[in-house]
Image (cartoon, rainbow, N blue to C red; front, side, top):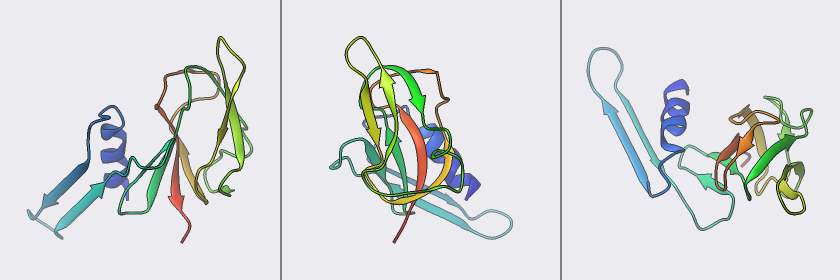
Amino acid sequence: MTLALDILEWAKDKPDLAEIHYENKANGAPIEITIKFDSSKPNVSINENRLAYIEAPAIGRLALDIAKTQPGQRLNAGELIGHIEGAAAPSRITSPLSGKVLRAVAAHGAPIGYGDPIILLEIKN
């Protein structure tokens, strides 16, 4: 799981990336990871491993609901998790999918850009 998270972290700054395939057949157990990104849903990147990023819908300063964005917390689709304070009215951040928070990628109070990953979710089946 750590390798998949590291690959997702590396991939977050590559918006034109559609698929990653990693294969290691060296010493030890063989490792094969394929991640496909689906950009058909707004504010989320989904892959075959059922992980997804909640992405920033605007540019500004990130204000998260700390209680809802702790690792292990369950989120429902449409649930409000915070907002982005910008030049205009605050932009609401809602979870586009139901799932469990694995980790916050962006820190509360940090400046954030459009499409930047905020929360890494494990998708609920």
